[in-house]
Length: 68
Image (cartoon, rainbow, N blue to C red; front, side, top):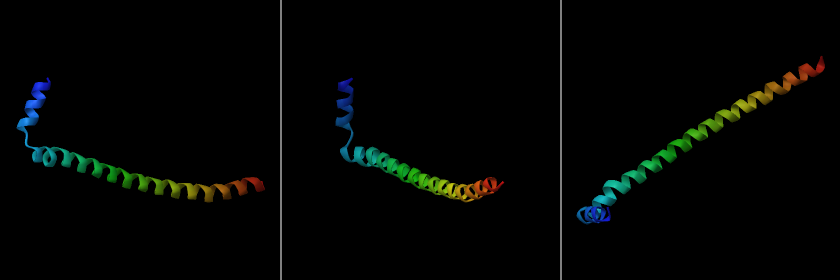
């Protein structure tokens, strides 16, 4: 197994390995991280808006129930 791997690495040029394999994979991973970070920030914003609405309406509902 190690002889196959060493032969493969000897025949494969270094720039192809870096530019053809490692760089695209790294860029793809960074792009996925950025995408999910943006999605998470949007969900956090929606949750804070929902929480604000529930606090606003929930407190007024609590006051109405308390008056009875």
